[in-house]
Length: 145
Image 1 (cartoon, rainbow, N blue to C red):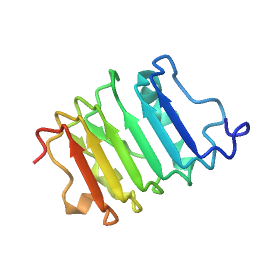
Image 2: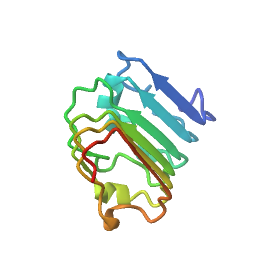
Image 3: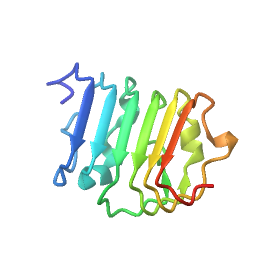
């Protein structure tokens, strides 16, 4: 994908339950937007996506529908590039906390959306939220105080 589509700016993948990984060589270097929804096998292999290498990535959406993996906290260490300005994630049925250390690393993050995380208890304190954040949306997270 990196050599065949080097100028690709946006990828949207949805409803591909059998897709497990991206092609060898990784995602295009110029990628700015990545949207993954309802692709449980691909999402379970997210640590192999190589997102840290994508210095142009600005928008990321990951929906964890049907993902059988038990995720207590998100984002995981070393998963997301600091270049993100928009992060949307959801459908994490077991997630109780947001990894404030990793969230704080996203120094350009302007917009954060958290959807359908019924076990999420609270947001990070002031020290765990990037000062660049200007838009926060939380939907269907009934325990957040």
